[in-house]
Image (tube, rainbow, N blue to C red):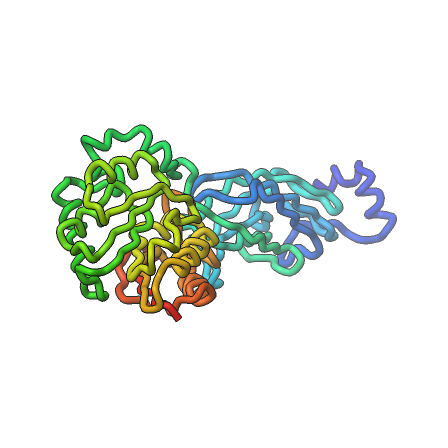
Length: 359
């Protein structure tokens, strides 16, 4: 190696400057890492190549192999500041002389859960981190893999609702399970103040799971308004639930189709809606409910909450939110939120059942 250096311009410069180029043995000295993010959003569990430029600004040789080998290391760090998963390192592509640099394409898989993370990079020598200027933390927003996203318009267009209306909206294992879930939701709503005379708004009514539960429960003085973005689902409900006080209409992702003239409503339900809408969409839907609910009206909704998420992370297939941030949104649009039940969901998330009362 030293013989090679003596034949290079770098070696001649070293002799004239009267300093010695030596292999790294301890701190590697001055250098720099620059990291290029492969894309603005990273998919959970999906590998992508991160390009890292390593620059040796020190007077030491940075060997690619051997006891004092220099490696580029990375690790995921969660929103709470805790390491997420194990760190991983890759060797330099070649030995770097003083003043030399190299680009590495490092395959890195996104964390197992969606959220807001930092990907920390540094350099280690003989297994010990160098730190200092040779460290960089890159903020990364992580979502579920795109392959697990859902286009609900496509789902309803291609489904045989006459054969499996109970499966398409929740992948229930059987029609009996679908009915049991429907009845359990009605019992829960009765515990939250539902009466036969209540006027109910069902956002994301799907193929009528709540309409089924309320068809034989609501009196003629009560009313049911169901809306969904799927035109096929709404048409199915119109054919299936034909009571005159049961009204169905196609809605938008952030708009409720029923006018104020429908009269003040007592209860709005969002079952498995905010688990599929983006946070800003959820806020607009709640504001729409504020337009339609009476002074004593309330909202029952569920969300998937994760401490790894700053606001919201995911896609139409599943959206996770930051619990405190979502509750602040509820207050901002005029509701007083209360968590009335909590259910386990995943290692890094839980499902919350919320009651929101008009403020």
